Image 1 (cartoon, rainbow, N blue to C red):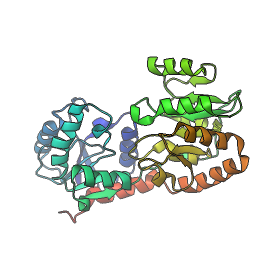
Image 2 (image 1 turned 90 degrees about the vertical axis):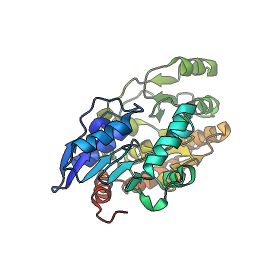
Image 3 (image 1 turned 180 degrees about the vertical axis):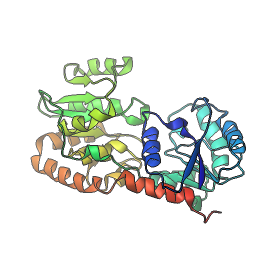
Image 4 (image 1 turned 180 degrees about the horizontal axis):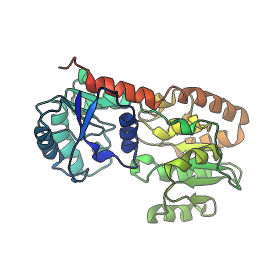
Length: 331
C-alpha cells in the first residue's frame, strides 16, 4: 500500500514523538512517500498545499498526517490525528474561528480521524459536530526507557517535578502557588523543565520560593527517565489536555503523579494517580502534602502507577494507527 505522509511533524515535540514511533513500526507492506514542502506547520495555507501534494503523488493510495491539518480536497482517503481542541480555548479568536470554520469542515470530509482519548473524541463530536463514527481513539504509548529500572537523577534534596511548557492550560501558576502554601518539609524543591521566563520568575519571587524552585532548561528526552525516577512525585495538574503523556511516563518510571480531575487526565490515570480540582489551590496543596508525608499512600500510588503504565505501549499505538490508515472499510 502506498501511503503519502505529512512528515513535517517529525520534531522534538509530542506530535513528533508519535510520528516517529508510528513510522518506526510501519508494516512491511507499506510503501511510504512524503510531503515535500518547507511550509511552516501553522501556515493557514497548509490545507491547500497538502491538496496539491496529493494531486502530485498520483500513485498514493491514502494520505496520513499525525496532526490536525487535513488537505483542502483529496482524491484518495484521508486519515489524520486531532490530539486536542486547545485552539478553541487557549489561543486567539482567529485560531478559534479557523478551527471552527476551516478545520472542522475539512475534518468532516476525512475518511477517518484518530484522537488520543475518549475525552477528546467527545469534544470533537460536541464542539465540532464531527460524526462519531469517523473517530477512532488510539492512546499514546510510553517508551520502554521510562520503565522503572534505570539511572536515577541525583539531587541533594527531594523534589516535585513538572515536565511541560508554560501555556495557560498547563496551570503552572496554580501549582507554584500551591507549592508555596503546602505544609511540606522545607527541603522539598520544585523542579521544572525549561528556562526561566519573566512571568514565572516574577511569580516565584512574589511567592517567596526563589530558593526552592529550579529551572532545568531544555532536558533532552534521553535524560527525562532519570529525572522522573529521581522525583518524589510528578505534578501535572492541567486545566485541559488531549492526553497527558507525562502522567504515563512518570508512572512507568515508578514515580507517583498528582494530576487533575479535568479533561482526559482521570481517564489516562485510570485511578492510579492522585487527582485534584485544578482550580482549587488548597486541593492542589493538600495533594502535595499527601504525597510528601503519607508514605503508605505514596507506595500505593507507585505500585498502581507501574501497573497502569504497562497498559500503554508504542507498539500498540502504532499497530492500531496502521490498522486505521490501512482499513479498507471506509465510508
